[in-house]
Length: 422
Ligand SMILES: C=CC1=C(C)c2cc3[nH]c(cc4nc(cc5[nH]c(cc1n2)c(C)c5CCC(=O)O)C(CCC(=O)O)=C4C)c(C)c3C=C
Ligand SMILES: [Fe+2]
Image (cartoon, rainbow, N blue to C red; front, side, top):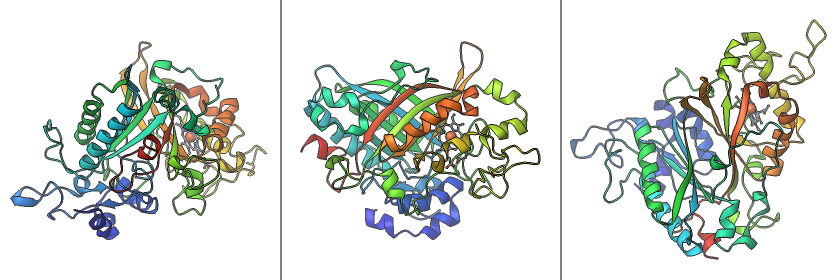
């Protein structure tokens, strides 16, 4: 199946057959320039349906294009499995080795995303289709010194400021290179992770790895915004690809604006491992939980009324004369109108790594947010949250990373080629 075939496949097929994440995300993916395709059960698609083999389900058969203006995995609908991995270049590896690695990774990502297995495959994902696999690559600040490219490091990679509530573990933070893997099947995601790790060979070593999840496509009766492990509907206020200023907020523009040309169509990913203090949170009565966020837990609607998509009424007073959405409510403090329009596209995974030494769940949010400029996205909002967010009593930022994610590769190009070979 060619990329143009992919684009040919109609929205109708997806909307009629996939679950919540897929249907909602189809719009996101298409508007964001990342093509998504799927075949109806029984149709012949890459890797299934042929030769009498059982047909793939639509979830398995859905694929996301590797080539495009933007890398896949930014506006792609949330997948049910995710791996975030940072690598450091090996001692002695420089620009040449990094370029060869990005070339290998791109070949692998393109093949796996279209449902093809690499040579000498492990067979882990043999029976499944691409399952909306995306593999997204980024560069950390330290990459530029290690490869002699310091002069081409973008200002967007200047270190994030320290925040008073940070409890960051440097060993699980930052890194020369970052890879985000997402798929709607756990084995497909693991398979891609192993392939990426093997491709690293002698050129790079894993610095840290985090594993996450979201709800499975089709688990809810109708398409819904995701829930996090605190039980909140999380993602409602995200900018929509149909917003007139979506591209300007999320993607680095081509030509001018002070941004390097190799970042055109790219974006900056801020990654935070945020532990949720679930034992404390779960003791809080429902009405207090709702005041922490400023929205109803059941359906995500603002406490000032309406449905999930109704605007917050930040000035509304209750019968007691107090603000209905409290001063320190998370939704109030993070709203773009409270932050000079600062906005980001949040695309997280939940995590659960068992029970910590203190006997509480080591669980929370792998918070990933995307923006054209971290100083006009994550930083101003986190500064404000750090000063007075009611949610901060129940969360702890444990690791952090900032990565420059270049634009999507054109046909015949590998990711990052415009940086590494210019
Ligand atoms: C600095 C950015 C943000 C961090 C860190 C963050 C952590 C965090 N958030 C939730 C839960 C919710 N967040 C919600 C809205 C929301 N959060 C941010 C930013 C950060 N959140 C923004 C920009 C917004 C949107 C505000 C708006 O547009 O009005 C919500 C409400 C529903 C929604 O809009 O998504 C919830 C719920 C958790 C649990 C968390 C850390 C673990
Ligand atoms: Fe939030």
